[in-house]
Image (cartoon, rainbow, N blue to C red):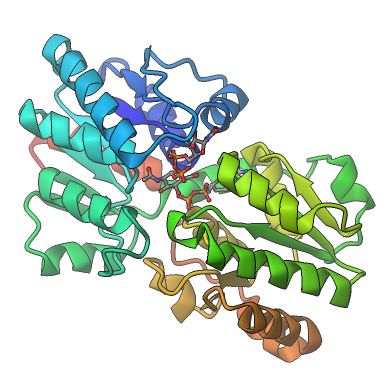
Length: 365
Ligand code: UD1
Ligand code: UDP
């Protein structure tokens, strides 16, 4: 069984699902989506023509962590009372992943954790994701770590079970999506290399930090009028409202709805730099050699920082502006970031995960 509920989990689990489906003689596959996200999840499912076997459809307006957790506990309990998979695969650090793992554990169903071992070791950054992934690590018996560093984190924690280093499945999706012949009217008309992308949605940034981010973007858009600032706003109503309040009606700031992931990957590829508090975008941008200023105080993806493509800048307005100015004013500084060394895998993570599962279930290794 594979389960996921939000946009990034879908983007990173669909290649695993598709790979598993290639071996019907070995694996009977069930896809359970929770609908923790609705529109943003459906957007991904539709792009890849995926129809889940079960959809809990739980999203409610202004849902809280407690709402999601309570509802999902009952749903997974009911499901696992009827269906007992040999293994459930969960991804990363969302509430969907945590509750699925927690209930699977109660039902003594084996858990495989994809994107295991990422850590900041700061329980409130990101919140609640750092706690979620640590807890899932305790419940799981199969751990698919994207990097050696992630594996070493698990070893240091005396994690039980087996660990494989596979690369990140998000890179599988990225490489599959990028096509020379991709057409987008906006990308074709905008100045090549003059795109700056912003995304922000972290819970701990909502409020004052996000105001700082938006004020920085506003000032940058006036300072750098030849650049197009593209901001696909997360559908969280709080963020939609704040973003429009601060950034509406600026001619070179494009406030748009979330892009389909195939389109978004091409926007990343065409961009000059990226401002984000996202996790997955840090990996994708590093793989493409696109500088990322991380709008957070910590990252669980230190490999990209070590390779020089990612820099943690936090959410202070002046700091963000200074860091963007430095990258745009100084080409040799920019080039130090823009080296496409990719520590997150070669696009075969899903294949490696399925090979590990074959070994685990059929050859005892
Ligand atoms: C969740 C994950 C986070 C991940 C993010 C990806 C948890 C704890 N956090 O955070 O790790 O980075 O997804 O985007 O699981 N909403 C809509 N339509 C949608 C999606 C969301 O209206 O398609 C609204 C929800 O109703 C809710 C808000 O956005 O009011 C936030 O969604 P939620 O799933 O609670 O958390 P995220 O911040 O998206
Ligand atoms: N993404 C997308 N459309 C957008 C913005 C992002 O498809 O308009 C993709 C992006 O390529 C990445 C994922 O969404 O794969 C990241 O999701 P998000 O930032 O919401 O969550 P996180 O990765 O922080 O958990």
